[in-house]
Image (cartoon, rainbow, N blue to C red):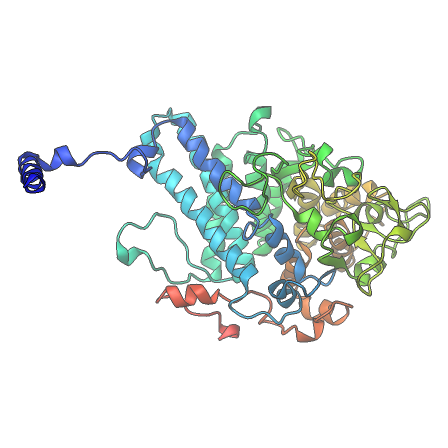
Length: 508
């Protein structure tokens, strides 16, 4: 009887309440209506978007992203213990490849977050100037993620708004040219409103220089040489003050993070949680484990990768003015040379796991005893070496290329020579023609950016993938198919989930 009375009473209370009274805010649930209240919320959303660049599985400058961007190059080998990495490196991958799928999905997660920021920022009560700057930052992040997508997948869907209705969930692919147009639009608009610099506490956020640098790089990929040169040349004069570091190796150690050569780098640090592989939660360490993945087993590494001998030999094509090896070789590779020391051990302490002659030194914590401790001794394998996403050396060589392709070799000369001079190489003949200058630019880019995710994409835009794969000692080169392997296929999971999606032609 008592139970029946309680039920009746509850019914009467509910009947007497209005709908508005019952629609209470759940304090344990964050929604778009409750989140966007102030500037701190906007900064937090931006931080979450930046953070995806180092996401361990799909961030382009996280572990798997670094392996993906480097793995198909003729200078790089990935061993076969992680099957999907070996498959992409040997051109035996299929549309369900996990590395490509995760990069695709993570890039769209970042685009979704950037779009959310732009659509909700009016709710945060900011001044017009602050709002403009934050929108510019979000556009930079969206543009960079579309850059990642277009160079890897070609035709992809373009999303510039957050879907609301069910029919907006699925989007068809746009032609590659349209994706490049979106990249250009985002970087152009970002550059207009981003600051030149930030205070030290905000170091690592996108600047005007970063936006112009990636805009110029996009123009080079589009072969729009005039706009590329005009854009990149701005970065060589005031108000910008970028320049090459005296020591090339300073670009790849934690002690020299955010130096004068860096236009944009991915901020990582061995702080936060105890697990770099935890994903986005309180357990996630803010460092990356790429160095541990690449390190040899003798120093607690997984020895996942190796440079090819093609790269090893290319470094020795030209000696310095003092008849010594290119100093970039010593900063990039570890091999059997007099006095060679790696992780405080001589070369004799290591066994090369593959048939190649060297190991990667660049981006490794080689001044430590091993990679187990991490830079803070937390025993979590986390590295604090920032990944340099765009360096001034790239700006100079891209600018030299854009000028040379317009037969303006005299204008291109000083930018190419600046990179050579840092490497202590002799002065070039100032009368080089277009073809000779482009051959030298191609050679310098191979040496300058080894292990920086550039080589495969350089060869693709030069139309040299087939030629250079054939002329390499890369494992799996015989499986490369020109046209097909220039891009990854659209992930099978996306094909299955999106009724408007169709596979790339060569992968059908």
